[in-house]
Image 1 (cartoon, rainbow, N blue to C red):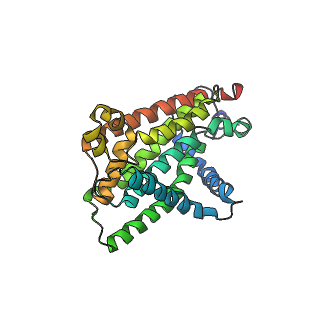
Image 2 (cartoon, helix red, strand yellow; image 1 turned 135 degrees about the vertical axis):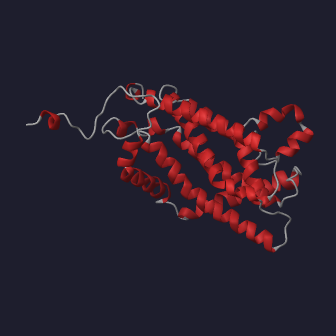
Image 3 (cartoon, helix red, strand yellow; image 1 turned 120 degrees about the horizontal axis):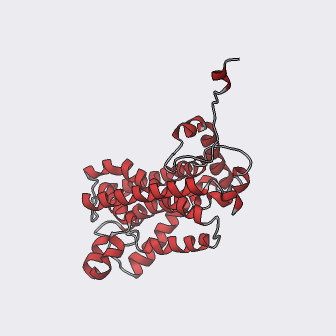
Length: 287
């Protein structure tokens, strides 16, 4: 038999590989598994619920109502002249996607330890499936936001989309990369320190208050300039401000702040990939 044919393998599993190797070819070869995992995440989460996917609408709608009452009516926090429900729903829609990607990705190793220990497949498939499955929820919530925009437009509300709305796909990619990068970092850390998952849940809630979800950046600049840097250098702030500026025509948006966010997001994503690829080699011994 020809020795070259004997030495040919269509799959090679090795403990030694480049830390920045994304295994894109393997991910493409396992694309059916990616689709299967996306379907599993969507179906399993809502299979035994009464309202099912309607929760995609109910959760942001109720949150918007509560924010409008507490922060808009009681606290009287300005919304840059925008209708309060539109202002809050814009922030909630973007924040929910990022927070869900981060939270669910952070438990990849611990939640799938049994699966990872039995069969080989590109481990990056699992966090990617979370990012894709959350896109379904984000798309439904965006339709709710678009419907809300239509209702207020028919009422003659003072808002107007700008040409920066074309940045929407780019902003979505930034949110996905940021959630994926941070999630992979935390997923690696929680293999040894399980209580970090509780810290993350608490930290995401605090991080939301350092993001312009319930208030505009202009309020921080005018009333609390000493704390402006805490909010402004939060990567999600410039994304949400750009999102509002594109769809509603109001927001403290600059290309410089978005460029800084893009660079920091890429750095976080690369760091997450390096740590994820390093930990996946021997995480079974620590989980």
